[in-house]
Length: 408
Ligand code: C2E
Ligand code: CA
Ligand code: CA
Image (cartoon, rainbow, N blue to C red):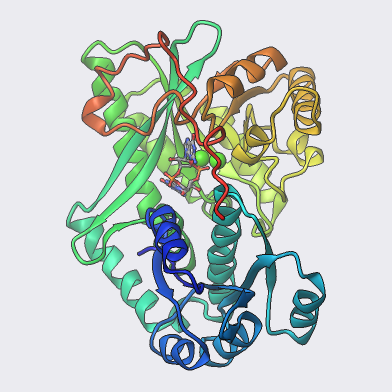
């Protein structure tokens, strides 16, 4: 289930090209009309975000958004887009009718970021307002569907390679969950994982993922695949509960997998209620011989001061830091500092979301040797893992960074 967004503009060609750009991540409704039409659309559908052009002949973007604000649910994010007319935008923000301003000309990345943030914020607001049984009807339905779906085998794991930049060899895989629902189609992990975290289903789902990843790896090793490490994602609440340790112990016994080939990725978050218990659980996993890595490092909440306390063995550098990498910029300086800090603390680093050879070279130059990202490989279906060989020859600049197109 992709987030629903509504785009309002007076030029049909612009709306069509925006729809194409955004279709992979969002269900896009486009509207080329004034306030009355918007009121009708907003009362019929729940949007995560509404974006409207500011100046349109015949109707006023601010008024359109004010109408949307009145007719849409209160969780909607209202975004004004336009050439910087900060006075009227600021007035609209002050009145509370607009949440955010997207200045034109906007790049594809900016637009995607604004909308992704809006969708994310929307989930947070929904979750704050309606915990567990008070989920809105469609989310409640999805929650119930998830439990049946696990039994029906609708969940699967895909495996994204992690490459050593020095040798260009595969040193590990991150297991990422997919839900191909017979009812909703392919549901984005950001959606179903969040719902599962809210309704508690994340625990059986993670146990399934842990068992699945460990037994697959054991099978590949039996078939003669060179040893690699597989990382499984775990949410912080689950780690804290203490149940994870027992599951990991059981899975290691059942599969006879060498513990050093299993890794647990956990994200630090505000949801960690008891840091002491969190640290204790990491310690127990370390004692089993399983390594723990801190995911999304540098993405916001996670701070350097916590790293030492948490006794993790690896930091996964968030894509946002990799995206900020340009020689001689602050992004490069931040990363360089992080690499030298990691070295001093004896931590390994993996950079995530590497999309271009230029980023890979910069990371190698800064001393971050292990990388993961679309430039090397998208996550692989289970059957493609054993035969996968990374071919470094003939690399091209294929990432999105160079292709950032100005929208209009
Ligand atoms: P994450 O753990 O940070 O996983 C990395 C995400 O970045 C994955 O998205 C991956 O497909 C994507 N990615 C990898 N390389 C690139 C790249 O070069 N460019 C871009 N734009 N993206 C890249 P995915 O699979 O959609 O997962 C999203 C999030 O859902 C994960 O973020 C993780 O937080 C959560 N998730 C996925 N599988 C699981 C799971 O089994 N358990 C738990 N608890 N969470 C999971
Ligand atoms: Ca991860
Ligand atoms: Ca991550």
